[in-house]
Length: 287
Image (cartoon, rainbow, N blue to C red; front, side, top):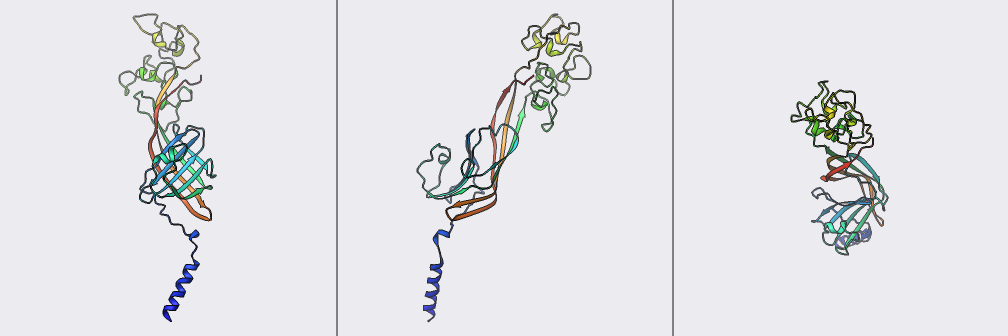
């Protein structure tokens, strides 16, 4: 009798199970590195767990260059332009699976959960350096010449068309002050205090006051208080600075669906990528 009852109970359990409702996943990406590819138009971020043959990927569609400026960017997931995918495979995929414009036919996708609701937040920390040798506060909002470039990455802090690195001199701790007015040359728009802006002591109008010399014994006119010939110059020189960006990526309040199946994640810390962008930015500020 007990054997018959046990068999009946087992049959009831088996009949009550619906394979379509069983989600067999590990959803474990803690040890997986965040990778990325793409660029303006379509950015892709992904993590691969090779042990369990699963991946999680995020596509963000924007025409902006999102890595070269420090910012906090939010993207609303919609399942198409901005979409999160959790997939399981027959074998582990490689980066090529996500970085090709047309995904390869192998490996085979066993499950594909799509996140069409939630928010992706990208924190971008951009480090910029004008290479002038001055130890400056990168949190400062100081823009001495009001050219739109903050002093800590401004190639020419005072906007006089003489590079800051040149005006500092040999000792950044004791920068040059040619006219003795207690304002260092790199922050002084009139270096010789003759009443004519350094930028406008440029008689040949080549945007370089250093090569305009009336008296060879004294040097450049912008450092000669006895020469005060004004040439109106309303153009800044070309500026350049180096930049390097790090990112942190999070996805919050996401619902992943695959047919009738759902996976809900309140927060997914995608991870970080250091030096995701580095290079030199060249710009001519508007006057």
